[in-house]
Length: 118
Image (spheres, rainbow, N blue to C red):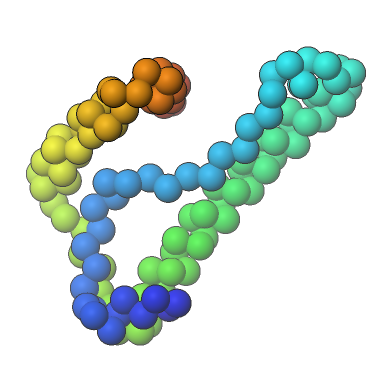
């Protein structure tokens, strides 16, 4: 482990309260400017990469957990009732931290609406 957190504590409580993502985006105007065969290739390649990236993320997380455990650490998953309380207490954070910046707040709303679709 790079940061050697296992020197401080051998117990890691998994809450799944935070999602760290990578995002790849491109301009819709640029995509529309491409010939249709090239545009289709870009979109299909992006879909393939999304699948590969998701699989890599899962494998990487499992490898980190295995390394944590092989270094003597243990992983605790909280009961669903506790996880529900954590999610409820964090539910308003995005709204609260973006409300004073109209552009940021509009972006937050758009991201939240998009996420709700999936």
